[in-house]
Image (cartoon, rainbow, N blue to C red; front, side, top):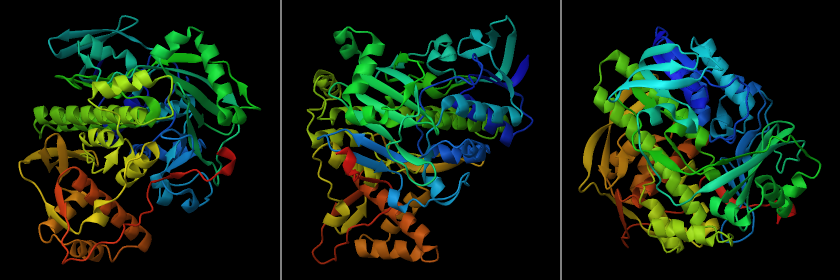
Amino acid sequence: MDYDVAIIGGGPAGATAGTLLKKYNSDLSVVIFEREKFPRDHIGESQLPAIAAILDEMGAWDKVEAAEFPIKIGSTNRWGKNPELWDFEFIPSELFVDEPRPGKYEGQRRFTAFQVDRSIYDKIVLDHAEEMGVEVRQQTNVKKVHRTNDRIDAIELGAGDRVTAKHYIDASGQVGIIRRAMAVDSEYPTTLQNIALWDYWQNAEWAVKIGVGATKIQVMSLGYGWIWFIPLGPTRTSVGLVVPASYYKERGIKPEQLYLEALSEEDRISALLKEATRENKFTSTKDWSFLASRQSGENWFLTGECAGFADPILSAGMTMAHCAGREAAYTILELERGKLDPKWLRAEFDSRQAQRIRSHIRFADYWYTANAQFVDIKQCIQGIAKDVGLDLSPDNAWNWLAQGGFIDEDLFAGVGGFAFFALKGLGNVLSELPTESPLEKFNTFRLNLAGASYKAGAQYRDGRIMETHSYKRDGKVLPVHGRFEVLVNVLQRTSSMDQIVDTLQAGLKQLDPKLRDRIFTQTMEAFEAMVSDGWIDASYDANRPAFKKVKYVDQTIRLNRDTRQT
C-alpha cells in the first residue's frame, strides 16, 4: 500500500486537501483514512464566507447548496457592555435579495456562508473527494506512526496493514495522530479553558427568516457563559452551552442538568425551543485553545484542529480547517513540481497556519475581556487580561488586539472574519471604544516603511504557489499586491487625501457601480488598516481639504431592530 499522499481524517481539512490534490494533479495517488463511518454528527456547524470560495474551487459548492442548508448572513448577539441585542451581518439584511434556491456561487452569495449539519456536510465533501479520484477508506483507523527522526516512514492501520507515502497529512482533529507521534509540543497562549455542552433539537423556531432560507445564528451571553443557537436545516437546530471549566466544577452538577438549566434561563432561546423536541444526543467536550509549536515536518503536515484550536465564539474552526487543507495541498503540489525551495514552502505553510490560529485565539480573548455582562466568570476574564497584560480598559484591550495586526497575507483587512470597519463597530457594542476614523480626523497620509524588511511570501492561486512580496515589521505584514499594492503606489505619488481618493476612484470608473462601490469601500478599509498597523502616518494640514466620512455597504454591526427581542 504505497501512495503519493496519505491523509488521516476525512473531515473538511482532509477532504479539501484530497480534492485539490486530485484537481490540480490527477496523476497523484491520494488516500484518506477515516476512523468513522459517515454520516456522523460533529460540532462546528457555523461557517464564515471564506469557505464558500474554497468550496467553489473544489467544485463542491453546488452540491453543498443543493443540500438546502440555511444561508448564514450573520449573527444576532447578546454580548458586550449591555444586554441589548446587536447584529453582525456579512451584508445588510435589507440588501439581501430573495432569490430561488438552489442558487449559484455568484453575486451576493459570494459574501454569505452556510450553517451546516455536519453529518450531511462532511459526507458531501468526502464523497466529492472520492468522486475526484481520492481513495477513501472509512472505518479505518491509524494505530501507529513509524518514524525516523522527523520523517515518517510509514503508518500502520488498525488491521495491521502498513502504508507508505511520499507525503502525509494529519487531519485527525484533536486526536492529532501525527502531531502526537512526532512529539510536537503545544502552546496555550490563553488562560481561557472552556467546556462545551450541546444537543440537537427538532422543530425549533428560527429567530430570523430572510427570504428563501437565509438566517442568522444566535449567540446569547449569560452571566456565567454563553449559548449558541444554529439552525442546520428546515427542522434541525444545534444548541450548545459554553462555560469555563472552573464554573462547571464549582457548580458540581451533571453536565446535562447544567445545560438544560441554562436554556431555561435564557428567555430568547427558551422561546425558540418552546415547541421543539430534543434528539437526546447530548455531548460534551473541552475546547481549550492551543497552538502546535510547528505545523509541518520533513514529509508531513498538520491541518485543522490537530494543528490548533480557537474558542468557538468566532465560528472559525471550519474556516481554518478548509484553509489549512487547501494550503497543504498547494504545498505538496509544488513539492512534487520541484521548482520552488522546499524549505521556503514549508516555512510559508507553517507561518500562515500559526498566524491564523494565533490571531483567532487573541480575538477570542478580546471578546471575552470586553463582555461586561459576565458576572460569575469575572475571575476568568481577569485571568485572561492578566495573562496578556491588560487592565480591561477598552482602549488598552483594543491596542492589545491591534498588536497582532489587522492585515494578513491573504489581503484581508480585519480579524477573525470581521472586516476592519465591522471591527470598529464591534468595539463600540462590546465596550466604550471610540470609533472615530482617522480618515475623518486627518487629511495628510504618508507611507512609513522605516525599519521594514522586504521579504518573499507565498500567494496560493489556481493550484500554484507564486512568489509575492510583503513588507514585514514588528510582527505585522503589508502585502505588496492587490489593493495594498495599489495603495502603496498611490501613496508614493501623493500624500493629500483628496488626491488619493480621486486617483482611486478614477481607476474604478469603468466598473459596474455596485462593484465599484464595494471595491472602493474595501480599498478604504485596507487604507485605514494600514494606518492602524503603522504603515501610514496620518496628520492634519489646515491648507488641505478634509475627506468626508466613508460610506460602506459591507459587513455591518448595529443594534438589533427586532423589538420582540429587546
